[in-house]
Image (cartoon, rainbow, N blue to C red):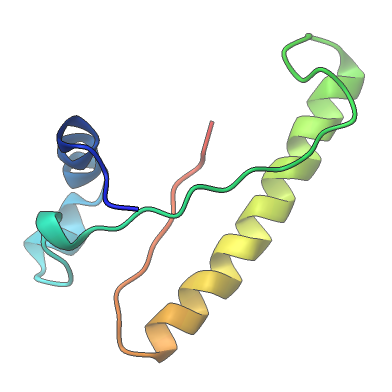
Length: 84
């Protein structure tokens, strides 16, 4: 998805070094939303929900690293940030 103008501005701040080094232009940034199913209501604050959030984050990072490796192998810039 192409990010909305305000999101593109925020992403330009997050990925400033990649932009400054000429790896990507702010207009070329595309986002890939990800969604994961959870068993618990992760808005609750319990040790169980904290564990489920950690598990989700670990799965996201593993996915994002694989995705970025595949995209980079095809000659494109890719990065990710913590979704929380």
